[in-house]
Amino acid sequence: MEQITAVDWSDPAVIQSLLIPWGIRLGVAIAIFVIGRWIARWLSGVLRKLMTRSKMDEMLVNFLGNIVYTVLILVVVMAALDHLGIETTSLLAVFGAAGLAIGLALKDSLANFSSGVMIILFRPFKVGDFIEAGGATGVVEEVRMFATILRTGDNRQIIVPNGNMYGGLIINYSAKATRRIDLVFGIGYGDDMAKAKKILDDIMQQDDRILSDPAPAIALGELGDSSVNFNVRPWVKSEDYWAVRADMLEKVKLAFDANDISIPYPHQEVYMHNVA
Image 1 (cartoon, rainbow, N blue to C red):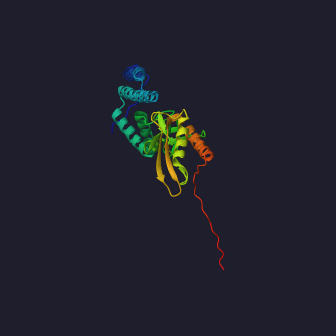
Image 2 (cartoon, rainbow, N blue to C red):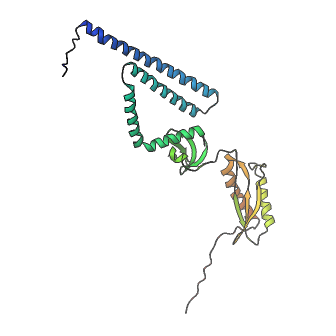
Image 3 (cartoon, rainbow, N blue to C red):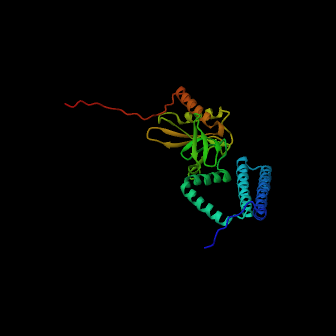
């Protein structure tokens, strides 16, 4: 067995042979880290400026800039540790094993993160859009890495995991500048069909919010069990959809009542018989 000898730290030769070289390596490693961090910050800043000049989305610019900066910092740290003589290969193996364990424990969070990346890259919707996704409906307020923030019509905040948002059906009501309102109005079989159709057409012609191109359409849709049903389909700007729809329902009801046109509704008749 080899005998371990004590190191005499009071000996100047020991200090010169051990501490001074180690101190120089430490100083160079610190310099590598400081300069490397400055270069990483500069490169990520240049990338941000280039993406901004190309009119990329601000959310995407910040995300990619942070990713590039983080990767460069990791490279700088590994270079500094390698100069100190630390075995980076074994360190990477330890980080890899730890990353695998953390990934298995946080698989749902990682799925939400990857879905957030897909939302940012492919942009099925943007901030301010009115959407239906992940079992919720509302206006997009913010897209985060793990969740999307929605605001409902009654001013509630809904936080939806990005995995639910991107993994299912997404309906973007704000994607197009115009929308079509689909309404069905029924009249009785004994009512004047031509008169009812003219009333519907006049109501749409008098509303300036209803577009002339595409032109609104009125068509006989169905001869129902108790009513003759008209399909009424005006086109409006997306922001006018709900207001025009509500006004149309009110105006048609009032106009039909004023012109003695009935709107059939389900009803039941009950007959009572006395049994001797």
